[in-house]
Image 1: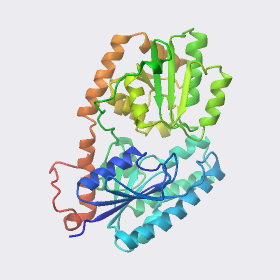
Image 2: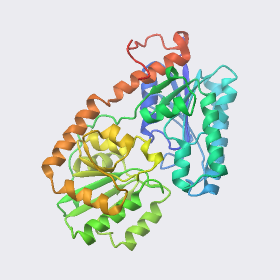
Image 3: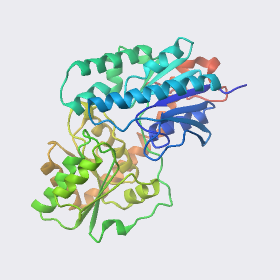
Image 4: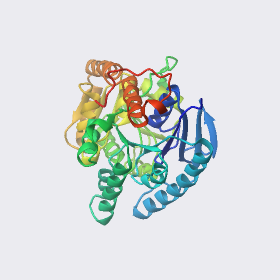
Length: 410
């Protein structure tokens, strides 16, 4: 009997770089589905088509990552064309029973709806609240903001079930999205276990006593500029020359952030290697003394589960972050929370933990324990499979999968 096929469409990142999408694909593959992914060509993943770990991947061209309104139009327009073309190609070849659309943006209902008319079920995977993201990027509401709200509403209408990354997103799906709570499943993002072979690399400290790290996207809503100014406060105002900073990642603001680092005369204290390999990333996370999450306090970030927060926890590292609702929901008691989204407050928070090794060690242990017990990916897999059982029913679900009878949307 032919395996039921699931098509996953993601526009924000390629796979396997998008770890959440990749983990979901692996979980569905292990559950007995044939998994096909459509994603963009970007950030080093440029093959048109390849098979990785039993998952078929098709990639399309996309314009450069957006920096303004016109950039968003170009990015999303080129992505939609590539996704539409490849989706019909996949339909002819694989005849998928479900299309799993991952936002942002909330435009993929345009791809999904024709297939829904053919009897295909639609799974809406809410990675980010797009209206809040739009407002955070542009700092205001206007005609385009309300167009984004309309697109979000149409995506909810198109969806048969919704996957929410956290409780805040789940509440929005039920209230603003008017989705019945039985059709909303909380599938939290969680990193994989740390490979045992990863070792410290003291050279990353560049001869200094401490290493403070950041890993993540570098866009205009991610607060990396606040982190650079916090480093300036640490070095120039507090007079600390014993701390090396390693900021890993790239994004639309990367070049501007390099220029800011230069203007603040921080090249000797801040290394910004851009996109790094997994081996480099894991080694850096193993080596660093402290992690930083610098996403500023705003309605969008309050609803986001930050991957970096979970990655620091996976490596048993204490961290400093601005006091965000879902930041607390993830890290719990395993972090120092800064109430004011200012460089000075962030810099002082960094020094508070750097100068208290016993507290750093305790926070790191709490974070690792919390991740492996309360926030493990295995729990999320149960809810992911429960969502697919709900939307597909027993007849279309792989027959060899055993479901936990207690798996639920909660």
